[in-house]
Image 1 (cartoon, rainbow over the protein chains, first blue to last red):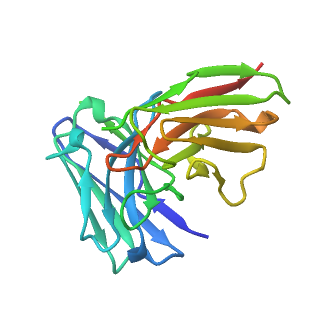
Image 2 (image 1 turned 120 degrees about the vertical axis):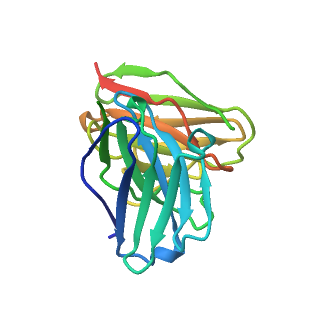
Length: 120
Length: 107
């Protein structure tokens, strides 16, 4: 059974950065990509971008261009999402999800989510 | 970017009722449409992919249909455990976008 396990709760001050990890298991990591989706409190789902498992391809939503970086570590089958210059409206649960190697497909397995709170 | 419009935003129905949710894309997305269920405090779960294919292990009371710009999602007989928010999502290109969600409650 595929598993995606994310890092724990983060509390950050405005202007800081956060890096969330997503460790995959029980599938060939480089045969798929990882998408990142966030959900602000009481709101819907917002796609942030995706990265191929080998880290060679990325695509970020325009909303996050210049503030987000997605990377992978194939030796540990782990994906990372770093968001910089945090603002209060970045407070959200951040999810990783498995996606096809092209980045366009269903998101068939999801991590448990990581709550990031941005507050002074 | 392709916009996904879901309706209604919420609904209340009785156990055993047939429930239908609509999702409209701002342009032709062929059948590149998925449906997810999200229960409070949990990650979304894929129910339907490619507009009408049931994900493995998902009960057969869930179904999806449509192509092009107009899609629908149906629960044939609503059960108490189906209380959740449902989202459509296209994958015709990036950025992937989601509908605004439909919250289903028991009357």
